[in-house]
Length: 169
Image 1: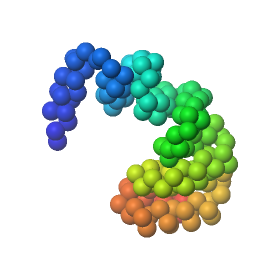
Image 2: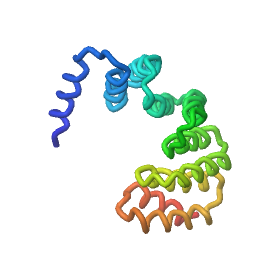
Image 3: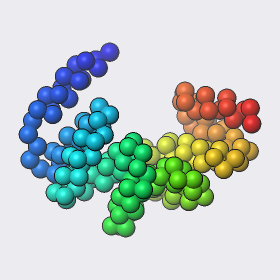
Image 4: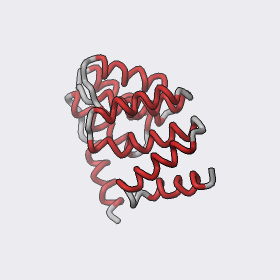
């Protein structure tokens, strides 16, 4: 229940003048958090032009929020081609593939992401794997994957609702 306090601090941070690529990145994170995606995109592009390395993943997520999976996928591919093997980039590509209806490609990217052994990203990758199988209409595999997922993350309310849906298939 400290949302108002947090909003006040975010506004204070936005009133500070950014100087470095990292400053612009953090400013973009605030705008993304506030769901001001156009502002976030503009600031993150400035950060990217200042060659701040971590910006591509966040900018990709902003493009996804703006329903522009093609631009997001382009950024994720560029990030990966630079040699950074990152589960977050593979997960981003998988989400882009799901948006575009390329479910087999999504599953390939999910497997590549899982191979990176990133515990922080594992949960999202496993959930997106279930979603990809659902869109493929492979409900048997989706149910199987959901069983494993819920063993790992039994308190995930969204997954519990999704499991209800799957139980009717």
